Structures are given as C-alpha cells and as structure tokens.
Image (tube, rainbow, N blue to C red):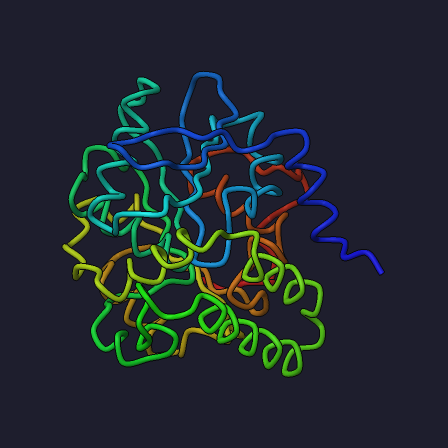
Length: 284
C-alpha cells in the first residue's frame, strides 16, 4: 500500500529537487523557490531533509522566497549558523524569517542569538532550550563518530516502531520517518546531526523584539516532555506561543494547512484560506 506522505513528498522532490551548495567548505542541500521579496528559511530536524517541508514550500512560495536546507556531513551548530549567513549572503538577502524544527529549532535559536541582524523573525518549533544532559541519553550516549551506523539507525527505528504502536493514527508519518532513518539520510549527515546536539553550545539570548518571536509545540509530542516545551517558552520571554492539540513532533507534516497559515499570520500575511480564523485546533 502506498504511503500518501511519501508519495506526495516524492512528487514534490521530482519537481523541485534539492541542489547542492558549498558553504564555508561544507556541502549543503538547498531548495530555493527564488524570487524577490521577504525570505523564509526552513531548517529541519534530525530526521528530515529540506523537502520534509514540501507542503509549506508549496503553499508559501507564491508569497515568500522560501529556502529550505539539508544539513552537511560535517560541522556543528556554530558552524552551521555561519553557513546559513553565507547562504543568505550568496543570495543577497540581508535578513530572513527563520523557522527551525527540533534540531533545526536549536540551530535557529543559536543563529538568532549570534547573528541577530540576519533573523527578522524566529520560529522555534518543537525544539529544545538546552543541550545539558543530552550526551547521557540515547542515541547520543553512543560513539557517534565510530559506532556502527546500523546500530544508530536501529535505535531510531525501534523508537519509531514504538511510536507507531502508541499512536497508530500517525502510522503514515512513522513509516515516512523510518524511510528517512533507513537510508535517505546518508551516514555522514546522520552522524553530524546527532553530534551537533551532543557537542552543541548553550544558547545565547535572542535579542529580537517579542513581536518577532514565535514558539510552536504540540501537546502530544512524543519526544519532548511538557517541562522542555515550557522551558523553551521561558527562554524566549514575550514570544507568541502556539500549541497544537495534536500533531506530534511534526505538526508541519500532519497539520500543513494550519501550520502554513500560522506562519502567514505571524509574518503579517493574509491567510492562505480566506475562511481561516485561527480555529480551535491549537491554543496560544
């Protein structure tokens, strides 16, 4: 049976494949819708490539220049923040809205704190507030440099299977993620993504005004405990928070219309759906 999420993503990827771009000596994957006007940079988590945002890219491209990225196989949080700035420089973009989910949310927060002039709006989505203690958790506690990649992948696959059993309504998403873990994310990229948090720096304050800060999370996120979600909001005082009542760790995949409209609302754009009013599917 065809997985509808994989089929839709693959159809998008065939029309808009990611290009490879060298930034400060590191090989990134980039999807860029092009055009002028305001820019939005989308940064995925550990288990996604640039095209995991295919639904937001498709919906928002008529209104924004959308740039989504896939991580390189080297470097870490501080390096990648410099690379994102180089990416903007290469396109003549002075500043952009930056949305990062999970690992990407940590990178986006670091970028906002260290290169404040480049981030005109920060979306910290389904993410962390600190890397303290992460090295003691699996799979980060393993030898991420030299341990067998099959063991690292197996740890994720086991977690995905448990997720699917606990939330059978998200089976298509779980299968989608298992395909990413199973090989669509190459070994070098997978190790770099895991090491980025294990060896990551603590976050500096985000100096953007409160109106330029948005936190997104979900009540049923199986990967982030309520206290972690609360701590992210606490470290971004004054930020507008949106908590999906359901959507797990990937509401942008499972709730794409609502997610895209949320972005529009926060960036001062009219809703994609004229009937959308910010319904009861999430709470501020």
